[in-house]
Image (cartoon, rainbow over all chains, first blue to last red; front, side, top):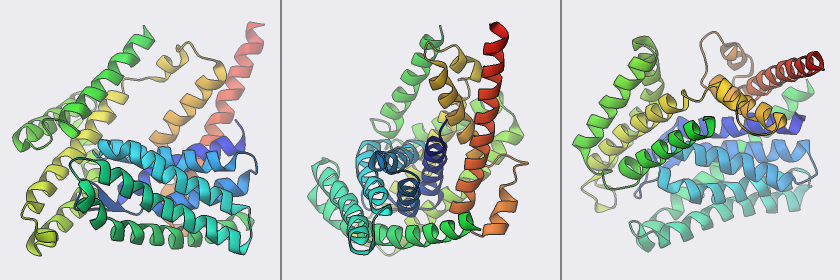
Amino acid sequence: MKNIKIAFIALMVVVALITLFIRIPLPSRGYFNFGDVAVVFSGLVLGSLTQKRNFWWGAGAGGIGSALADILGGFFMFAPITLVAKGVEGGLCALASGRQKFSRWLLILLGGAAMVACYFIAEALMPNIGLQGAVSEILPNLIQAGGGIAGGLLAFTAYKKIVKD
Amino acid sequence: MVVLKLGIILVLILSFFWLFVFGPFYDHIATQLVVLIGVIGWNMLRFSLRETISLLKFCFPFVFTLFLFGLIFHFTRLLGRQDWLEDTFIKCIVFPSSLVFLKVLLSYITYLDILNLPISMKKRVDLITIKSAFSKGGLESGSNIKYRLKKYACLMIALYLYLYEEIENSNRLLRNRYQHLHEANK
């Protein structure tokens, strides 16, 4: 098994466990969590490990890990949306990993925005949540995305230092 | 036979989620309570009382944060909703019951089943590695995760580094054994 595959499996489990860790209920049947930190972190780590298909490695770890957390945590109905939303976020972070300054920040921010947009569209279309519920979740999702980017970048910086040492 | 066994397990998982998490019985508190007691009892029979208590302890922080915020939202009447407490109570039951149910059912998938699957050896090794990674991620007793936590003071990085090392080791062992058996068969 190649190193990237081992890292992928390890990060997928990390994303699932961190997402499950702390949870705050939201107006819909969903919950606020700190999984985005792990999604951003795993995207950046996997992106730094490989240049080939790095989007898909990041998307897989972020998307599958988060969707697994939804399934394990009793929020099965959100799993398909989470798979796409967190997958895009993780994938864009993996793409950002190999880039410098502006394009790096742009891709990471796009990842966060894509996650919020995916949840908004999907929740607005869900009959038991609707447009009103989806609108009320924009702010918590934005906070979650912002916290995820800040925490993920910090963890990645710390990780790089640890790996170097 | 193995495919049939895995198929039955998959059907049971999907039926459980369709009935109690996603579907018609989600709002039935009494049914959810019976299901929770049932899966806890099943876990006790399958494993032990001690194991069940440690699993419930594992669930406690998650359930507690859910309940705490539900209580705060209820008393502050967030978004004008009156049903925060009821909604939170359901979530507090659904979360442990779905977790315990999945854990018990997935425990029936053994390493031997994976070995008997009609797939390539490479894929078998990958599946075994994923199964072992999840059990390691459950922070088994006796693991050196506590040491890592103290050293790096960062759960996520420590968890990642720990899992990476464990997966790499178990994978190396698996490959060596497979190679050895392959050569012995020749």
